[in-house]
Image (cartoon, rainbow over all chains, first blue to last red; front, side):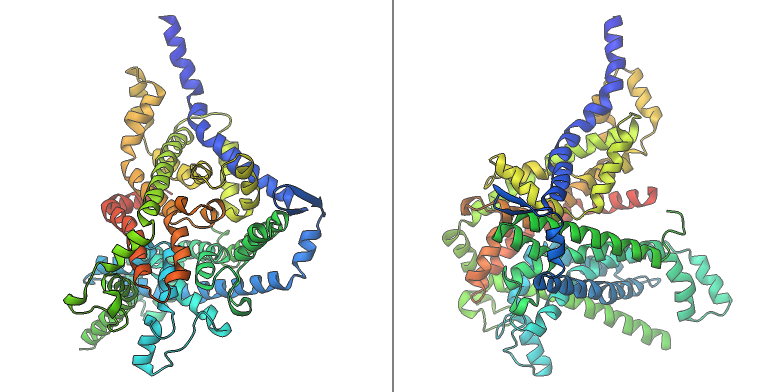
Length: 301
Length: 273
């Protein structure tokens, strides 16, 4: 009987290792190893999986004089700016509307606003390819009916309209989703603070400025950082809506699209890795700056 | 009076926003069930006599759409199950045991979460190529079967399981795996539901990696197939919309089944962390 008791204690000691083992093995092989390997690869020029030449920091040096890459960075940055300064305020606005006391149908509206998020990014892209069609597309027909605009407007074929089309699509997809975070944050703000502010004679704007905003700040910083990171990884929408090329004059070329083109169409996995690490470092720096500006670190978390 | 007017404006704004959100989906639905001949005649729904299943018929006869559906269900089903098992088991270990490798594992997990996944696309491609898994479903399932996010989610929710409960189980002679299977997992049911939904959506909608791995049409998943259909059907888009509708439906159905778990699971996580 002593044997089985010992076995019982042994399995307690080694159980956690066995429990994390399946995850750890796959994570090591398909997570950590590729991550480390991509850093190595970024110092090489490759052509297909078999041939490679060491170029040191050459890939990175070339990136910053590569007009297509700079164009992709510019496009992606513009898209990210729209996400943070147009989409998130709209999300907050919707959340404020839904946060009124004694609102009828709050759960219904919340579900409706959230519903586009149930449609995967790829399928959103397919749907909006059709919505943006000249002549028969929903958008042109609605704009024609309301404002008499040209039915022939080629949203996805016109250099200046490509970015608005992408922004519009992502607005539809994400405004309601981000609203959920803001609404949860708003519902967590202490009601007594509002009553106290009212007693002090604060008007609606002052209450928003001094009670609401500080109350939702941690969540707001979280949403801003996440939505920036997500924006910089934009891929599916332009890839499906504009074709692999990036649209007229590369007006919709994004960083990840450029990574895909170089790695998997041209076959230079080294250059693709260099693009990936540049993206990763860029996103990291931007997130740190955002957290510093918003003072998220001062709270000690 | 001013208050009533304000309420009317509020509801008008909400109704307007709701209409904008729903219109594309309603339009999609209408395009899918209209007869192709009247696709452009009516902006939304035609009279009932012009409704038809023609788009769906075309979808299943001229395109191996059923094949794509089965591929997506197979890959997503296997991936979600494996992710669920690995994450909940690993999360249990990270939540309820003290062991030396715990901190290094958590630090590494956190670090990779900060790095966009596209960074590792190139070496992952090399790896899958050398392993002979290109153009196969295993090439999608194997790298996709772990979820760092899932590990954190389950660790977070299983931290709340009282140690006394686990000790009581041990005294009764329950094995460590038995504690996971009979105590930890059932207690975390809302989180299981929430994770299944999140994991299902992630895998079902995944595009970039399958686009790199899959080449043979018979092996395509729905996102890859739909991407190919865009070029063919963007003018006569009834078929395209029917395909999109069927591709969205499983996620929508799952959402309504798991809605309660999804919300309680997420709020449970939010209260603690």
